[in-house]
Image (spheres, one colour):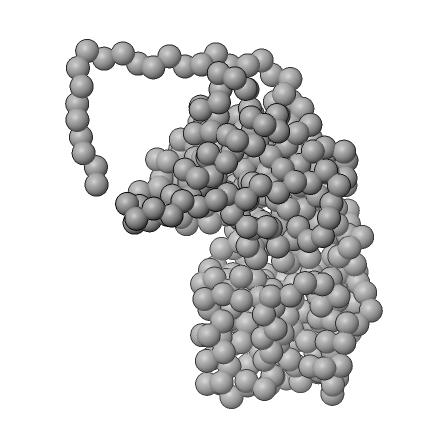
Length: 395
């Protein structure tokens, strides 16, 4: 199959999943074409059967705001036409599904392209609920040939929030290469940042407000009352400065280290004793799964799809959003009970391998693509005819 993949190329779960999906499909012999405004950060090095098409942004004085949605649709048409795509798989409803619909309508007389939309989270739970976007998101979902979500939680949210009645949404969880994300030898991080044998707490994210990064600092502040520990924060974003400020205000700045965006996450994660995910909203929690695959127990909030990944009391613990005291108690419990910590670590690794391995979940996407390609081509809809015209200017 020739498959186009559209995603955000930045440091976030949806881009990670889309990129890893494309790489896995390419290894199976499919042609994969990434269409986005920058090289996906996980698309490092050369990969057989993988191609990249950059969306060029127009620069014209008349347009006060960038027209990414239209530029993306135009690039989609170009790639569909000349690369003979069978499937266009877009990740995130806004604006990718909208651009895909526009591209499909432009080219439908010469090419029958199938659109798959994967919903990842804030496109449904936050941005998509804005009054200005809600009808657009609903339309894009209903007009997609197939829709998937990364968790049961997200599927139910989508059906309810957007009153979706006649569209099936398949749940295909996020996946991970457990041969890559595996407990490994130290990368030198522990020797550098915890030379006195301190325990290491870790957090990885894009530091958006929804991640509640400052809560990791509050958790550490409580943990330090019982256990010598360090907090390692991986990633960057708008909430970094607030977390830095809070760590200094609490007088624990020397115990907190901000490493920015990093490659080599499996080795870094393997140095952690506990992974923290205090998010306000997580439709899945890919960072938690990555930690679990590296044999690291997770303490997280019970928001969204996280309980579908973490088994409370077996692979980690979950608490209410903002309950940093409870989360700190869970962390201390794990850090002061070596046998329990080992049991949780082994259970975390086992769950990742048995439930979320790439080889187990990739066939679900391939089966979905094949089902769409086997379905008959739908007849184009006839435009409605009216006797009069109504002009309504919207500015």
